[in-house]
Length: 110
Length: 114
Image (cartoon, rainbow over all chains, first blue to last red; front, side, top):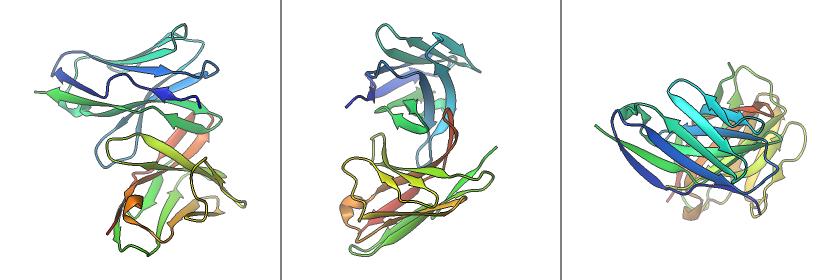
């Protein structure tokens, strides 16, 4: 079946550098995507979302880019901080259901 | 905003026993809730859709007789893991959709079956 997936399972970044987390999706009919952050032992926390009619959306220190041509999403975190260490999931919202990709573990090196 | 509360946050049980996990929507009436399971270092996998007043809808491969879901009110859904085995040990998470585009997640329940 169609699914949302990630290329990089782990990512280590120096504190203060920018982080880029990538995600590939296969359902070309998807029209809404979400990035979640999950800290150890906790539920997912909403970070930012984007609709398919957009190619970029910015939040506080985070930017999501959507390339529909190659079915690719990315999450950019500016000036990465130790508190950003977590697992990040891209997800596809499909009529109330949220379907998660495999996740990337971000580790920030002080 | 809406707050979703799960209870317990962790539980240890013996093989063969049943465990009930509660998911409460504290600020929002939810006709639908979702249950996910997450194994270590893996993603969240949707198990089922809990429907208030009717039967739950299970995803392919999820045993409905093993994972009993009851959504008796607009603020409470329960997931009961029946005859639990060590392979059922996992992190169980519920979510409450506010709309097609927004959902809140519980803090999760860590189940360990010994």
